[in-house]
Length: 260
Image (cartoon, rainbow, N blue to C red; front, side):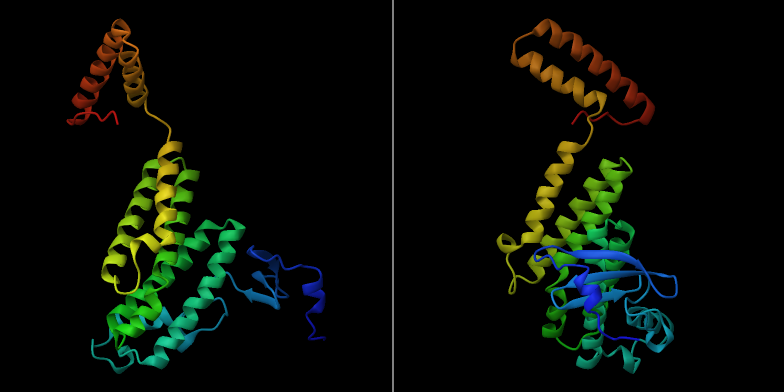
């Protein structure tokens, strides 16, 4: 069997500036993800660790360490994450990075969500057990990007399900997390230079524009327009309808209805 991958590369041109990913069927009939790079191809399995390895018999290094946290003493030697252990976790996070950007290019939102959550949990593990702040920063410098990718995937899935309120809440929470991050790591990064925060703010604005308006919101807009053109008779009719709807909503929920 030839070890030359030239035929694979020759049939799949590299496109600079784009994430070139595809699904294939492996020789065992199971799905694989391939990511085209300038000098080759990465091939990954779609579940657990992308390389298919099982560290210490677990689906990932993260799961191994979470198992130790839950089932051993807090001072277990393996939980003192020395530089070698941190490097192994960083390597795992990089593998998940390659896979979730591939999933993103392929539109597989569940995969993006699962893999970015995996990386975020690695960051949290490092924060709990790494030996010094410099090692923590080696991981957390990637937090804005991973948090943004996670929020984008979760919000896109919510939009697909026509749940704009949830999508907006997800992005707002991510913006708060990034601001907290920038405050905690102010010695390393400033808010004005955080592209991921800007992207999330743009995403939030876009979601609010795309969110379908309720009947109350449409009535309020009509009322504002009627007042603006001094059509007070129409404004009075709209106001009566608004009051009726708000009274009914308040009776039903026990809370005043929101118009905006």
